[in-house]
Image 1 (spheres, rainbow, N blue to C red):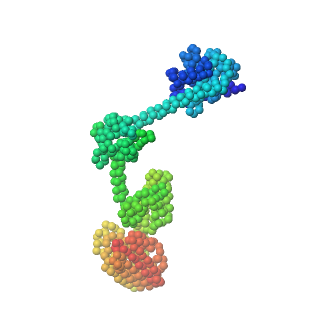
Image 2: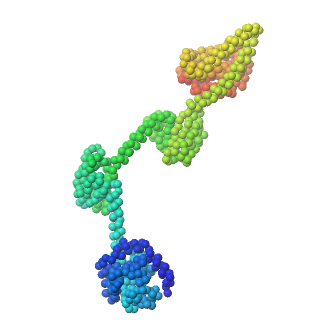
Length: 631
């Protein structure tokens, strides 16, 4: 015995299935319009089975509707529907299988159904009508007003007719859906901002044109007739020549079987303007139709030209700046660089060869001349910029005596590096700091020199007046040498020192020590003129050497000797040798210390030269090599 409560639950669920209800409406099965295909089916089955009533019953959410009926009495034959309380067919929907009732009054499932009394339904045979997905929309049934034992032949007869009705329902659903899709496609094609034309491939007849193309030419393009008449559209190729009918993409696809991927031409609009159109064409629908689509790219081309112009200007600016600029992809490989970077890499070739050389190479790995610390700092800066989106800035020593400021920016998936050589600024900063130390150093040395001069002058002079005279002369000579150093430190006085030579500079710097007659001082110097710019460093260098000689070397005690030689080599560099011979063993403390650091700054960093010193028992040899450009 069936579980009535369970059947009731399942029935309510199935009857309210939205897709099932929607399919009935789409197929027109809830329409009161009489249709022969269904009316003939119920009449045929009633006659074949000799029953008074046959129905095509659609089970709605709250009623059953008879799309076709024969034999129903009033008022059901007029209303063509009953409430579900009078429906046997709802059980066919619920069970998704035929329902066979020989005597409804004794059948547990339907014995309380209102149709037994009101419609005189005593025996019932119903077969499901399903959609393509298998959901039951309703039932094809036959009814008798007396008990009847339905046979297998009866069931097969009903099934055959029901399947015919079912096929018609499915056909209607497919047609309805196809019509809906076609309507949607037509609406999409009509409203898209792309001009579309469709033509027959057999005749070339234009079947359709959408609003966009008609609006562009202010005409119904379909009225042109065939693709042979497309030259009625006023169009020109980009070179100015006329576009003929056979040049249009629709013509080529329709009559020549030649698809067109892209054809750009100028089309004259209704108001006389010219618009640039990018068009393509294909054959569709098993080669029975040809479609051509065209997009107005006038504004896009203008924007592209503007962007290209801006990119060209930007590229010119990037190539004109002195900072090196490099763009890296997400793997750190070079995708762009400017002329300054090419120059800094000392790659002397045209830009095309440089692009071939650099592009695709890992930037950090290329910096084999840089320190490992710099490369690690750079990797970290790039990663930080990528993760945070904020610029990273670092100033670091890339190699010996070379300093760069690197700014890293995030540009989409790229990293953009702006590199500036700040070696000169760094050296200036170092120089300022060194000069401050030097001022303090020189003040201390002045006291030491003055004390030394007093001691040197006192030797061999007993007369007080003579002692004062000699000492005053030596202090004045020291002041003159000190002024020479100051000239190098004060830029405003450089222009006034235009006739300075190496010989004159050495004479001025060593005069305080030569006048004492305690030391033997000799110069072997070629004629080497000095520019005002060299007086920034050379007086300070010679003053430092004299100071060291006074404290540790040849000028420390009487009998010391100094020989200075200066000569040009190969016309592009000068070698200056400062050779001290001491009366006493040389004090090794003069080898290192602030004075040596100061000489390193002046000679190596500012003048671009080199030097070496060698302690030799009771003497010292200092050799300095300077480029001609530093003199």
